[in-house]
Image (cartoon, rainbow, N blue to C red; front, side):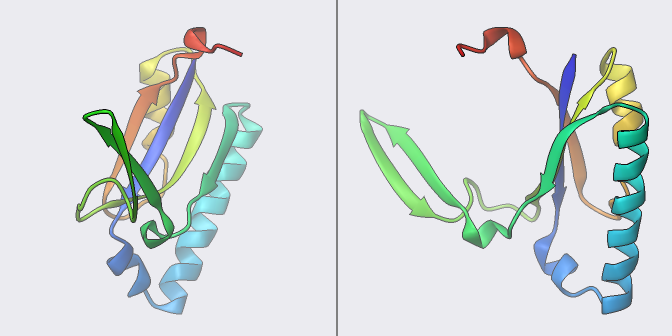
Length: 118
């Protein structure tokens, strides 16, 4: 089964990091990514541009509204994701535990590939 590991963090705090801290975090993510490539778990993933680049479509009452910015105002923004292959939720959680984020959260969600219409 595939799982989506969504990484949430505080963009302001990430932007305030020193060059040395940013380099260390980048190296930690590179090591983590290499590890899950070698283990065969990685199926995809990317770092996302800042939430200020997002555009959101909201629907209600039969109308669509397109707005700049992320879906919701929060202290944490979605900053990246991995798609991994795991036998079960426990294995997906074990993989997610190794993501080198220093604050924020990682949401682990199963991908419903059985519902694909293509």
